[in-house]
Picture (cartoon, one colour):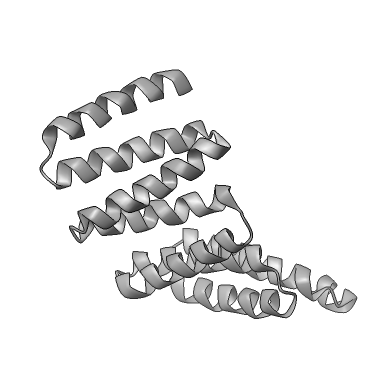
Length: 168
């Protein structure tokens, strides 16, 4: 960190804050992680680095979710999603949609969850991500199971098993 400060490479310092924030988050040190991620966002704002800011916001969403602060986690995920969408970063939009989809299911907002599933499917079809295929099938299974539509839940569970075999 000091080397980058001496070089006055502030953008790299923002990346270091982000990476350290992720390490702290993975180790359950959420307050330290949040502080570092907020520093990274301040730097990314100065350099108009939208994608890096969106990545930091997404991790802040995970931290809030881990602390059962659902209101803030949703806000961070939506901010992150909208920034990724603004830069046409489809690959990074998908995790945001998944997080919001699972949240909608937990809150029994099934129509919202279906809408998020549809958005995910449109994006995933464009980028042809097999892991995304697996994730969306898992989300659909949970959606239909939670809504009491066991016939569709079983269908998506079987599709999930089929896709897993293809991936392996």
